[in-house]
Amino acid sequence: MIVADTKMLAQVCEKQGFFAALDQSGGSTPGALKLYGIPESAYSGDAEMFRLIHEMRVRIITAPAFTGEKVIGAILFEATMDGQAQGKPVPAFLWEERGVVPFLKVDKGLQDEADGVQLMKPIPSLDPLLERAVKLGICGTKMRSVVKLNSQTGIAAIVKQQFEVAAQIDSHGLMPILEPEVSIKSPDKAGAEATLLAELTKGLDALPESRRVMLKLTIPDVPDFYRPLIEHPRVARVVALSGGYSRTEACEKLAENHGMIASFSRALINDLKHSMSDSEFDAALAAAIDEIYQASVEKV
Image (cartoon, rainbow, N blue to C red):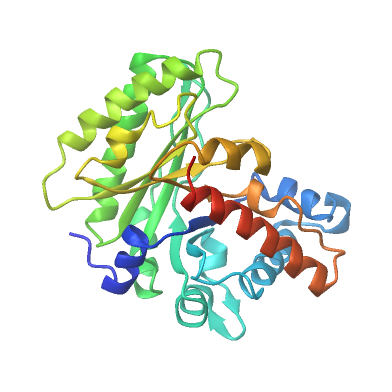
């Protein structure tokens, strides 16, 4: 049922480049600000914290290098979607001024680990959120769960939940990105990836021809391991999370996976600091964008 802007969808499915993940939420925001050079002692309360992270994100998306030339899309936190950049709603600014397709993170965080995985917490207000996203010009959504162990039943539960919520998202005409992250610290990462591949394939095979989804996956231990998913007719695109790897390591691994492009968060913004001058900030961001773009489009 996807009814998002056809130009946006064409860019999402076909354009060379990568996705910027600018969607740190409440739990991960203090860490993101600390990395940026703003300690927790510099602000008090959630409102001030979210104001500071919004300022950081606006600084990123208004930088000269942050354009659709290399950045296909940007995944936003809900408060960022509702915010402004240069006097425009952020989604409109991204698409109209930068040529970058806006996506929205919709999950509300993770449940406690059980059966080797962390399912998503319930998302009780998802329908009104999706209605608001559509009005603001959002093209699609992203939702994350985490695989810690190679547990067949746990991974099956994660995939089932991801596809169930994806159906709800699709009913609003939005492109769902399913993100069942395999932890890079998993003691049997390759085994978990094999189980995940099998479960995702089952879920994709069961989709009607009218449905397509995107997948956001940890870079696999075996290069091109997810090639069957990349080539699956129900998959619009497979993007990779950096998962705690350094940018250099993540880019080296990504370059070995044909057809897989980046959707990095920490690996994109790690070198950016609040204290930088605008020229220093813009140069550091441009260097990160160039490195991630190259790993996404130039494969070994």
